[in-house]
Image 1 (spheres, protein in one colour):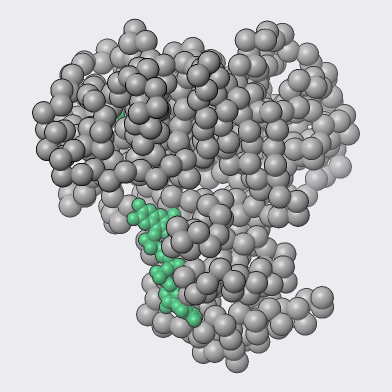
Image 2: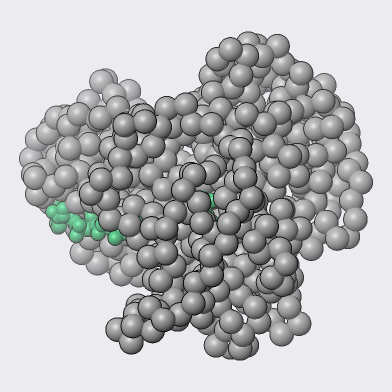
Length: 249
Length: 323
Ligand SMILES: Cc1cc2nc3c(=O)[nH]c(=O)nc-3n(C[C@H](O)[C@H](O)[C@H](O)COP(=O)(O)OP(=O)(O)OC[C@H]3O[C@@H](n4cnc5c(N)ncnc54)[C@H](O)[C@@H]3O)c2cc1C
Ligand SMILES: Nc1ncnc2c1ncn2[C@@H]1O[C@H](COP(=O)(O)O)[C@@H](O)[C@H]1O
């Protein structure tokens, strides 16, 4: 099986986001970059599929040179090779998908895994964009997945208040949700091997953003409210405040 | 010009987020000189007419049984056909599980682009400006979609649907042209826990964290939630411990919620948890540690033991609300 995993290089979840000098993106100073948490589930799903069916797992990322570090994390988990679509020009999701699609279109993918969402721009859209651009089915936010020998897919996805069962078939783009598996930790040996695994560089064709960022701001800071009191004696006052002041009950 | 709003129903009942989307579209439509046309898959004609109460002049009603269950291929094709027929360059839809799956494919098929999970819409110089949270709400960006065709998915529970004003939408039945190939990916069924409110849709949420000490103690959370008519949520610590299902996890790697009331019980308020709930309108925190970071974002706090305070609050609410 020819398996691809799209990974995204994102600020660590503990990052205190500050607006950068351009007023349109974050200030990268002091930021620790990680493999997008949802992409760990995607890499794990790809590795398990390879282990069950044989084949090859390629980790793909669009971005500047710094993203190689994230590609190597996927390689350290056990992927076979990397594919780096090099660009210093940040793109909107449509443009990122376009670069991924043009790179993957002649590579005969059986499955392309993504994460449900990249925790930087929180788009939740890549799997759908890629599926449509490559004319492949997409199954998103899968928290359970079975790919059968005949290529048919059965997945479960979370919907409001419950679960939905979705069927589809390979080749397809699938986005991973927490619960799909338990991502393995890279072992020291894996980290050493990752340094020698090949990463192919490709250049994307030019693109003009379709979504223009006008400005980035910080949300209004919520100031700490009041401590109503201590212990169960305070509940009477709390209920009164919720009714009279906050007007939520 | 026309703005198309894709509405959503489950088991024949239209979701509130659909009305929110219609109203949000209507609020910008005036300045754009546009009409709002709703699209409804399934449900009945009465539901299609009722869209008028929130601002839709017309509802295109697709009553094809095959479309009662969601299929992204078939829905995309249907919406594109409707958008062409209605001359709509702009499509809005709720950013629900369905909307998040449909929106990107739709944007590409229309040769447009998507602004996802928008929390505010305005018009500047004849063009829509959308505000959306990024980095789990730690920053906000204002964006314009520069392609002619534009898709906006709107975060549920943020836009107000208001009260229906009694107007009725003109209803037009539509049968999309579809092939079997459009149904390659399709839902074959859903399992919805009956009577259970989802955190992403609830207007009040009671969440519990590691301070509850064990899953057996969740009745404290459930009792308070039922007194408030709230959904139950959880911190990741307790989801990872297997005490609660992932569907209840609130936070950066769980669900982002913005209810009117969020009650955090025995939750410390880690940055990843705050990322998912700090846009709640009113936040109440109950924690025995007066220095817990959750108090930094709480409007009202009680310093105390959840095992004493939560049952007392439940009782007080019950007598206050008279049930
Ligand atoms: C990549 C990543 C993603 C994450 N995503 C999320 C996410 O989406 N959502 C999320 O919630 N977390 C997330 N986390 C985890 C987060 O960092 C915290 O570990 C977690 O939120 C802590 O949960 P908690 O508040 O229940 O537990 P704790 O931090 O252990 O806090 C328990 C609190 O209960 C109080 N307490 C204890 N006993 C009592 C008592 N008897 N009465 C009253 N109060 C009491 C304590 O004072 C304490 O403040 C993420 C972490 C990482 C690294
Ligand atoms: N720059 C990128 N390069 C490769 N894959 C990406 C990139 N950005 C996002 N993805 C993939 O798309 C998924 C969803 O991202 P998004 O739609 O941006 O929230 C991520 O989990 C990744 O799998």
